[in-house]
Length: 379
Ligand SMILES: Nc1nc2c(c(=O)[nH]1)N[C@H]1C(S)=C(S)[C@@H](COP(=O)(O)O)O[C@H]1N2
Ligand SMILES: [Mo]
Image (tube, rainbow, N blue to C red; front, side, top):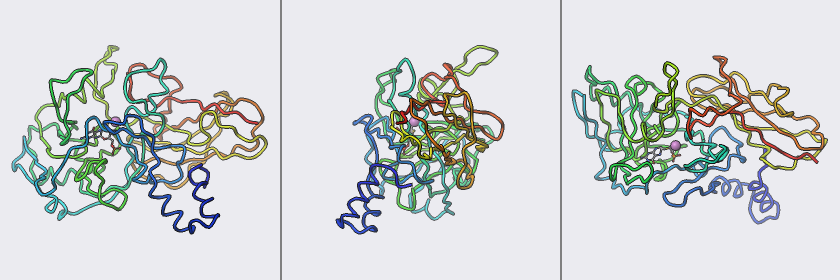
Protein backbone atom coordinates (compact mmCIF):
# COMPACT_ATOMS: atom_id res chain seq x y z
CA UNK A 1 0.00 0.00 0.00
CA UNK A 2 2.80 2.41 -0.88
CA UNK A 3 0.43 5.09 -1.92
CA UNK A 4 1.03 8.27 -0.09
CA UNK A 5 2.88 11.20 -1.53
CA UNK A 6 5.51 11.01 1.19
CA UNK A 7 6.30 7.39 0.45
CA UNK A 8 6.52 8.13 -3.24
CA UNK A 9 9.10 10.84 -2.61
CA UNK A 10 11.29 8.46 -0.64
CA UNK A 11 10.92 5.74 -3.22
CA UNK A 12 11.95 8.18 -5.94
CA UNK A 13 15.05 9.08 -3.92
CA UNK A 14 15.80 5.38 -3.56
CA UNK A 15 15.19 4.77 -7.28
CA UNK A 16 17.51 7.66 -8.18
CA UNK A 17 20.24 5.95 -6.22
CA UNK A 18 20.33 8.74 -3.63
CA UNK A 19 19.40 6.27 -0.89
CA UNK A 20 19.47 2.51 -0.57
CA UNK A 21 15.96 1.09 -0.19
CA UNK A 22 16.81 0.13 3.40
CA UNK A 23 18.07 3.62 4.23
CA UNK A 24 14.96 5.09 2.59
CA UNK A 25 12.61 2.96 4.64
CA UNK A 26 14.53 3.79 7.86
CA UNK A 27 14.48 7.50 7.12
CA UNK A 28 10.80 7.29 6.28
CA UNK A 29 9.97 5.62 9.59
CA UNK A 30 11.67 8.46 11.46
CA UNK A 31 9.98 11.31 9.58
CA UNK A 32 7.24 13.01 11.52
CA UNK A 33 4.05 13.06 9.50
CA UNK A 34 2.05 15.59 11.46
CA UNK A 35 0.14 18.80 10.82
CA UNK A 36 0.34 21.73 13.24
CA UNK A 37 -3.10 22.73 14.57
CA UNK A 38 -1.86 24.95 17.41
CA UNK A 39 1.81 25.87 17.62
CA UNK A 40 1.92 26.70 21.32
CA UNK A 41 0.91 24.76 23.33
CA UNK A 42 1.89 22.03 20.90
CA UNK A 43 -1.16 20.42 19.24
CA UNK A 44 -0.29 18.37 16.17
CA UNK A 45 -2.36 15.84 14.32
CA UNK A 46 -1.27 12.86 12.32
CA UNK A 47 -1.86 12.75 8.58
CA UNK A 48 -4.54 10.07 8.71
CA UNK A 49 -4.52 9.75 4.90
CA UNK A 50 -1.16 7.99 5.24
CA UNK A 51 -2.67 5.12 7.30
CA UNK A 52 -0.90 1.95 6.27
CA UNK A 53 -0.23 -0.01 9.44
CA UNK A 54 -1.98 -1.19 12.57
CA UNK A 55 0.55 0.59 14.82
CA UNK A 56 0.96 4.34 14.38
CA UNK A 57 4.65 5.33 14.44
CA UNK A 58 5.53 7.42 17.52
CA UNK A 59 6.93 10.19 15.30
CA UNK A 60 3.52 10.57 13.65
CA UNK A 61 1.25 9.98 16.66
CA UNK A 62 -0.91 13.05 17.37
CA UNK A 63 -0.05 15.39 20.24
CA UNK A 64 -2.75 17.04 22.32
CA UNK A 65 -1.49 19.47 24.99
CA UNK A 66 -3.51 21.92 27.09
CA UNK A 67 -0.41 23.62 28.50
CA UNK A 68 3.32 23.86 27.83
CA UNK A 69 5.18 20.58 28.32
CA UNK A 70 6.41 20.51 31.96
CA UNK A 71 10.09 20.26 32.88
CA UNK A 72 10.63 17.07 34.86
CA UNK A 73 13.86 15.98 36.55
CA UNK A 74 13.70 12.20 36.65
CA UNK A 75 15.96 12.09 39.73
CA UNK A 76 13.46 14.17 41.70
CA UNK A 77 10.35 12.68 40.09
CA UNK A 78 8.11 10.39 42.14
CA UNK A 79 4.70 8.89 41.52
CA UNK A 80 2.67 9.72 44.62
CA UNK A 81 -0.36 7.65 45.55
CA UNK A 82 -2.52 9.11 48.31
CA UNK A 83 -6.05 9.58 49.64
CA UNK A 84 -8.28 6.68 50.70
CA UNK A 85 -5.47 4.09 50.81
CA UNK A 86 -3.97 1.94 53.59
CA UNK A 87 -0.42 2.77 52.53
CA UNK A 88 0.36 6.01 50.67
CA UNK A 89 3.16 5.46 48.14
CA UNK A 90 5.96 7.51 46.66
CA UNK A 91 7.62 5.51 43.91
CA UNK A 92 10.69 6.28 41.80
CA UNK A 93 10.91 5.12 38.17
CA UNK A 94 13.39 2.40 39.21
CA UNK A 95 10.91 1.07 41.76
CA UNK A 96 8.07 1.13 39.21
CA UNK A 97 10.11 -0.66 36.59
CA UNK A 98 10.87 -3.49 39.03
CA UNK A 99 7.16 -4.42 39.02
CA UNK A 100 5.88 -6.95 36.52
CA UNK A 101 5.54 -5.05 33.24
CA UNK A 102 3.10 -5.59 30.40
CA UNK A 103 3.12 -4.51 26.77
CA UNK A 104 -0.13 -4.06 24.87
CA UNK A 105 -1.51 -2.10 21.94
CA UNK A 106 -4.25 0.39 22.80
CA UNK A 107 -6.02 2.93 20.63
CA UNK A 108 -6.28 6.55 21.64
CA UNK A 109 -8.65 9.09 20.10
CA UNK A 110 -9.12 12.69 21.21
CA UNK A 111 -12.77 13.42 22.05
CA UNK A 112 -12.53 16.37 19.63
CA UNK A 113 -11.20 14.37 16.67
CA UNK A 114 -13.15 15.41 13.55
CA UNK A 115 -14.28 18.71 15.05
CA UNK A 116 -13.48 20.64 11.86
CA UNK A 117 -16.38 18.82 10.17
CA UNK A 118 -19.01 20.24 12.55
CA UNK A 119 -21.28 22.91 11.07
CA UNK A 120 -21.64 25.64 12.07
CA UNK A 121 -17.99 25.79 13.22
CA UNK A 122 -17.38 25.47 16.97
CA UNK A 123 -14.72 26.52 19.46
CA UNK A 124 -11.80 24.17 20.18
CA UNK A 125 -8.81 22.70 18.34
CA UNK A 126 -9.83 22.15 14.73
CA UNK A 127 -8.89 18.50 14.34
CA UNK A 128 -9.50 16.77 11.03
CA UNK A 129 -9.15 12.97 11.04
CA UNK A 130 -5.75 12.58 12.67
CA UNK A 131 -6.28 12.98 16.43
CA UNK A 132 -6.31 9.19 16.72
CA UNK A 133 -3.65 6.49 16.74
CA UNK A 134 -2.83 3.01 17.95
CA UNK A 135 0.42 2.43 19.82
CA UNK A 136 2.00 -0.38 21.78
CA UNK A 137 2.41 0.70 25.40
CA UNK A 138 4.77 -0.75 28.00
CA UNK A 139 4.20 -0.29 31.70
CA UNK A 140 2.09 -1.69 34.49
CA UNK A 141 -1.65 -1.99 35.01
CA UNK A 142 -2.96 0.82 37.22
CA UNK A 143 -4.62 -2.01 39.20
CA UNK A 144 -1.18 -3.21 40.41
CA UNK A 145 -0.50 0.18 42.01
CA UNK A 146 -3.96 0.34 43.56
CA UNK A 147 -3.42 -3.09 45.03
CA UNK A 148 -0.03 -2.13 46.50
CA UNK A 149 -1.49 0.97 48.12
CA UNK A 150 -4.50 -0.91 49.50
CA UNK A 151 -7.67 0.90 48.44
CA UNK A 152 -10.02 1.62 51.36
CA UNK A 153 -13.66 0.57 51.29
CA UNK A 154 -15.03 4.11 50.93
CA UNK A 155 -13.06 4.71 47.69
CA UNK A 156 -15.05 5.29 44.49
CA UNK A 157 -12.78 7.29 42.19
CA UNK A 158 -9.15 7.42 41.06
CA UNK A 159 -7.91 10.89 40.13
CA UNK A 160 -4.86 11.17 37.87
CA UNK A 161 -2.88 14.41 38.01
CA UNK A 162 -0.26 15.60 35.52
CA UNK A 163 2.74 17.88 36.14
CA UNK A 164 1.59 20.43 33.54
CA UNK A 165 -0.41 23.41 34.75
CA UNK A 166 -1.77 26.73 33.63
CA UNK A 167 -4.72 29.09 33.56
CA UNK A 168 -7.55 28.30 31.17
CA UNK A 169 -9.14 31.38 29.60
CA UNK A 170 -12.43 29.93 28.33
CA UNK A 171 -14.30 28.84 30.36
CA UNK A 172 -12.09 30.53 32.97
CA UNK A 173 -10.35 28.28 35.48
CA UNK A 174 -9.87 29.40 39.11
CA UNK A 175 -6.28 30.49 38.47
CA UNK A 176 -3.57 28.00 37.46
CA UNK A 177 -4.64 24.36 37.65
CA UNK A 178 -2.95 21.06 36.80
CA UNK A 179 -4.35 18.81 34.08
CA UNK A 180 -6.26 16.09 35.94
CA UNK A 181 -8.93 13.51 35.23
CA UNK A 182 -10.84 10.99 37.32
CA UNK A 183 -11.88 7.40 36.62
CA UNK A 184 -14.42 5.40 38.59
CA UNK A 185 -12.58 2.77 40.67
CA UNK A 186 -14.22 0.00 38.65
CA UNK A 187 -12.71 1.24 35.37
CA UNK A 188 -9.36 2.02 37.03
CA UNK A 189 -9.04 -1.67 38.00
CA UNK A 190 -9.51 -3.01 34.46
CA UNK A 191 -6.48 -4.52 32.69
CA UNK A 192 -6.77 -2.07 29.76
CA UNK A 193 -5.87 0.84 32.07
CA UNK A 194 -2.09 1.18 32.14
CA UNK A 195 0.64 3.40 33.49
CA UNK A 196 3.17 3.45 30.66
CA UNK A 197 6.83 4.40 30.39
CA UNK A 198 7.34 2.83 26.96
CA UNK A 199 5.73 3.48 23.56
CA UNK A 200 6.24 1.37 20.44
CA UNK A 201 9.24 -0.45 21.89
CA UNK A 202 11.14 2.67 22.96
CA UNK A 203 11.18 4.97 25.95
CA UNK A 204 8.08 7.17 26.13
CA UNK A 205 8.87 10.53 24.51
CA UNK A 206 8.46 13.86 26.32
CA UNK A 207 5.55 15.09 24.19
CA UNK A 208 3.64 11.85 24.85
CA UNK A 209 4.02 12.18 28.62
CA UNK A 210 7.45 10.93 29.81
CA UNK A 211 8.43 9.73 32.28
CA UNK A 212 5.02 8.17 32.98
CA UNK A 213 1.52 8.48 31.55
CA UNK A 214 -1.81 6.76 31.93
CA UNK A 215 -3.35 5.02 28.94
CA UNK A 216 -7.03 4.32 29.46
CA UNK A 217 -8.05 1.73 26.86
CA UNK A 218 -11.57 2.20 25.47
CA UNK A 219 -11.94 5.78 26.62
CA UNK A 220 -11.35 9.03 24.80
CA UNK A 221 -7.84 10.47 25.17
CA UNK A 222 -8.51 13.07 27.90
CA UNK A 223 -8.44 10.28 30.51
CA UNK A 224 -4.93 9.17 29.49
CA UNK A 225 -3.14 11.72 31.71
CA UNK A 226 0.46 12.47 30.69
CA UNK A 227 3.41 13.48 32.92
CA UNK A 228 1.66 11.67 35.76
CA UNK A 229 2.83 12.74 39.22
CA UNK A 230 -0.01 12.03 41.60
CA UNK A 231 -2.83 9.51 41.96
CA UNK A 232 -5.50 10.41 44.48
CA UNK A 233 -7.98 7.80 45.63
CA UNK A 234 -11.17 9.69 46.41
CA UNK A 235 -14.38 8.82 48.24
CA UNK A 236 -16.49 10.97 45.88
CA UNK A 237 -16.68 11.25 42.10
CA UNK A 238 -14.22 13.91 40.95
CA UNK A 239 -15.78 17.19 39.76
CA UNK A 240 -12.62 18.71 38.24
CA UNK A 241 -12.41 21.15 35.35
CA UNK A 242 -11.83 18.54 32.64
CA UNK A 243 -14.88 16.47 33.43
CA UNK A 244 -17.41 19.18 34.15
CA UNK A 245 -16.69 22.46 32.34
CA UNK A 246 -14.66 20.66 29.67
CA UNK A 247 -14.91 17.12 28.23
CA UNK A 248 -18.52 16.68 29.29
CA UNK A 249 -21.68 16.13 27.24
CA UNK A 250 -25.44 16.13 27.75
CA UNK A 251 -26.82 12.74 28.61
CA UNK A 252 -30.60 12.48 28.60
CA UNK A 253 -31.85 11.59 32.08
CA UNK A 254 -35.64 11.38 32.31
CA UNK A 255 -35.64 13.25 29.02
CA UNK A 256 -33.63 16.13 30.49
CA UNK A 257 -30.12 16.96 29.34
CA UNK A 258 -27.73 16.30 32.25
CA UNK A 259 -24.00 17.12 32.04
CA UNK A 260 -21.93 13.93 32.21
CA UNK A 261 -18.17 13.37 31.91
CA UNK A 262 -17.08 11.93 28.55
CA UNK A 263 -15.82 8.37 28.89
CA UNK A 264 -16.07 5.59 26.28
CA UNK A 265 -15.21 6.03 22.63
CA UNK A 266 -18.23 5.78 20.33
CA UNK A 267 -18.42 3.43 17.37
CA UNK A 268 -16.76 5.09 14.38
CA UNK A 269 -15.03 4.54 11.06
CA UNK A 270 -12.86 6.88 9.03
CA UNK A 271 -11.88 6.78 5.37
CA UNK A 272 -8.14 7.28 4.93
CA UNK A 273 -8.12 7.06 1.14
CA UNK A 274 -9.42 8.60 -1.01
CA UNK A 275 -9.17 11.98 0.68
CA UNK A 276 -11.81 14.69 0.36
CA UNK A 277 -11.56 16.26 -3.10
CA UNK A 278 -9.20 13.62 -4.47
CA UNK A 279 -9.34 12.84 -8.19
CA UNK A 280 -9.95 9.14 -8.70
CA UNK A 281 -9.07 7.68 -12.13
CA UNK A 282 -12.18 6.39 -13.95
CA UNK A 283 -12.55 2.75 -14.91
CA UNK A 284 -9.65 1.43 -12.83
CA UNK A 285 -10.22 -0.56 -9.63
CA UNK A 286 -9.60 1.61 -6.57
CA UNK A 287 -9.09 0.30 -3.04
CA UNK A 288 -10.85 2.44 -0.46
CA UNK A 289 -9.11 2.01 2.91
CA UNK A 290 -9.75 3.10 6.46
CA UNK A 291 -10.08 2.13 10.11
CA UNK A 292 -12.96 1.47 12.50
CA UNK A 293 -13.08 1.38 16.30
CA UNK A 294 -15.31 1.57 19.34
CA UNK A 295 -14.90 1.88 23.11
CA UNK A 296 -15.87 -1.28 24.85
CA UNK A 297 -16.95 -3.64 22.15
CA UNK A 298 -15.79 -5.24 18.93
CA UNK A 299 -16.27 -3.98 15.38
CA UNK A 300 -18.62 -6.44 13.65
CA UNK A 301 -18.79 -4.85 10.22
CA UNK A 302 -17.97 -1.83 8.10
CA UNK A 303 -20.14 -0.95 5.15
CA UNK A 304 -19.35 1.35 2.25
CA UNK A 305 -21.67 3.44 0.13
CA UNK A 306 -20.51 5.06 -3.09
CA UNK A 307 -23.92 6.48 -3.96
CA UNK A 308 -24.34 8.94 -1.10
CA UNK A 309 -25.92 6.44 1.31
CA UNK A 310 -28.56 4.81 -0.94
CA UNK A 311 -26.94 1.37 -1.02
CA UNK A 312 -24.31 -0.22 1.23
CA UNK A 313 -21.82 -3.03 0.69
CA UNK A 314 -19.60 -4.80 3.20
CA UNK A 315 -15.93 -3.80 3.39
CA UNK A 316 -13.31 -6.43 4.18
CA UNK A 317 -11.98 -6.28 7.73
CA UNK A 318 -8.25 -6.96 7.57
CA UNK A 319 -5.95 -8.39 10.25
CA UNK A 320 -7.41 -9.78 13.46
CA UNK A 321 -9.57 -8.12 16.09
CA UNK A 322 -7.43 -6.78 18.97
CA UNK A 323 -9.21 -5.61 22.14
CA UNK A 324 -9.35 -1.81 22.60
CA UNK A 325 -7.75 -1.22 19.20
CA UNK A 326 -8.99 -0.31 15.77
CA UNK A 327 -9.71 -2.66 12.92
CA UNK A 328 -8.35 -1.71 9.53
CA UNK A 329 -10.61 -2.33 6.53
CA UNK A 330 -10.62 -2.04 2.76
CA UNK A 331 -13.14 -2.03 -0.03
CA UNK A 332 -12.48 -2.75 -3.67
CA UNK A 333 -14.28 -0.18 -5.87
CA UNK A 334 -14.31 -2.12 -9.16
CA UNK A 335 -14.82 0.49 -11.88
CA UNK A 336 -15.36 4.10 -10.74
CA UNK A 337 -17.64 5.94 -13.21
CA UNK A 338 -16.90 9.57 -14.12
CA UNK A 339 -18.64 12.22 -12.05
CA UNK A 340 -18.84 13.52 -8.49
CA UNK A 341 -19.15 10.73 -5.92
CA UNK A 342 -20.01 10.79 -2.20
CA UNK A 343 -18.29 7.92 -0.41
CA UNK A 344 -19.39 6.91 3.08
CA UNK A 345 -18.29 4.31 5.57
CA UNK A 346 -20.41 3.07 8.46
CA UNK A 347 -19.17 0.82 11.28
CA UNK A 348 -21.31 -1.46 13.44
CA UNK A 349 -20.34 -2.98 16.80
CA UNK A 350 -21.12 -6.59 17.67
CA UNK A 351 -23.90 -5.26 19.96
CA UNK A 352 -25.63 -4.09 16.76
CA UNK A 353 -25.03 -0.41 17.49
CA UNK A 354 -24.04 1.41 14.27
CA UNK A 355 -22.52 4.80 13.55
CA UNK A 356 -25.35 7.33 13.32
CA UNK A 357 -25.98 9.19 10.07
CA UNK A 358 -26.68 12.47 11.87
CA UNK A 359 -24.76 14.50 14.41
CA UNK A 360 -26.10 14.37 17.97
CA UNK A 361 -26.18 17.94 19.35
CA UNK A 362 -26.14 16.58 22.93
CA UNK A 363 -22.46 15.77 22.39
CA UNK A 364 -21.58 19.50 22.29
CA UNK A 365 -18.15 19.73 20.59
CA UNK A 366 -17.01 16.17 21.34
CA UNK A 367 -17.57 12.54 20.32
CA UNK A 368 -17.77 13.30 16.62
CA UNK A 369 -18.62 9.86 15.29
CA UNK A 370 -21.48 10.25 12.82
CA UNK A 371 -21.01 9.20 9.20
CA UNK A 372 -18.93 11.77 7.29
CA UNK A 373 -19.18 11.69 3.49
CA UNK A 374 -16.00 12.04 1.45
CA UNK A 375 -16.67 13.78 -1.85
CA UNK A 376 -14.34 12.88 -4.72
CA UNK A 377 -14.26 13.40 -8.45
CA UNK A 378 -13.89 10.45 -10.78
CA UNK A 379 -12.39 11.36 -14.15
N1 LIG B 1 -1.04 16.04 31.63
C1 LIG B 1 -1.79 16.03 30.51
N2 LIG B 1 -2.30 14.88 30.08
C2 LIG B 1 -3.05 14.84 28.96
C3 LIG B 1 -3.34 16.02 28.24
C4 LIG B 1 -2.77 17.23 28.70
O1 LIG B 1 -2.94 18.31 28.11
N3 LIG B 1 -1.99 17.20 29.85
N4 LIG B 1 -4.16 15.95 27.13
C5 LIG B 1 -5.10 14.80 27.09
C6 LIG B 1 -5.82 14.65 25.84
S1 LIG B 1 -7.16 15.65 25.63
C7 LIG B 1 -5.49 13.68 24.94
S2 LIG B 1 -6.45 13.43 23.57
C8 LIG B 1 -4.30 12.80 25.13
C9 LIG B 1 -3.35 12.91 23.96
O2 LIG B 1 -2.18 12.17 24.16
P1 LIG B 1 -0.97 12.35 23.13
O3 LIG B 1 -0.58 13.80 23.12
O4 LIG B 1 0.12 11.45 23.57
O5 LIG B 1 -1.51 11.93 21.80
O6 LIG B 1 -3.57 13.14 26.30
C10 LIG B 1 -4.38 13.50 27.40
N5 LIG B 1 -3.53 13.65 28.56
MO1 LIG C 1 -8.26 14.99 23.78
